[in-house]
Length: 142
Image (cartoon, rainbow, N blue to C red; front, side):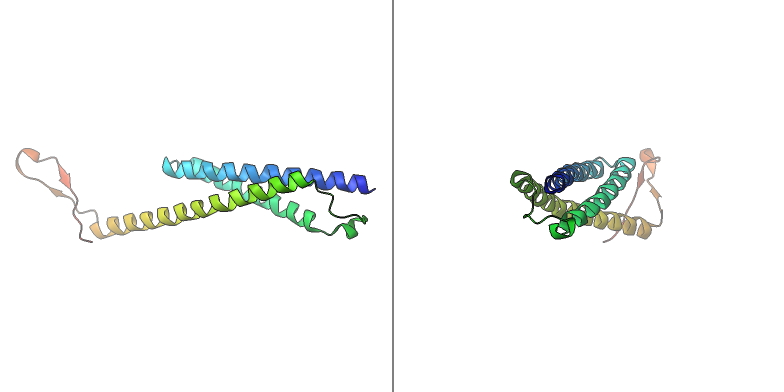
């Protein structure tokens, strides 16, 4: 019975690691979408991130259950190498998450500034006279 529990926990831990790496990839995709101004790609990435995060939460809860409640008396059977990979992937994901959060914060701030700029301009366009009759200029005071 202990071997079956150990195999199940190792399978769950391997899936957890795979999902951590997939989430890191999705965050990179989202940052690329922001850089390329690709709204649809960004929205798709957000949906994928939500699904991955939900599954990670379920697996984390399963893996955090003490083994005694799983009818095993041995210490945590998750492979040491696998645990190390999970910790490394988790640290990498946390660092990337800080960068991602900063990018979202600054992008939101830039968007708010543009909205403010466009609202203050109120769409007033001044046409130049003379040979530049068709050129338009925007002016704003910040």
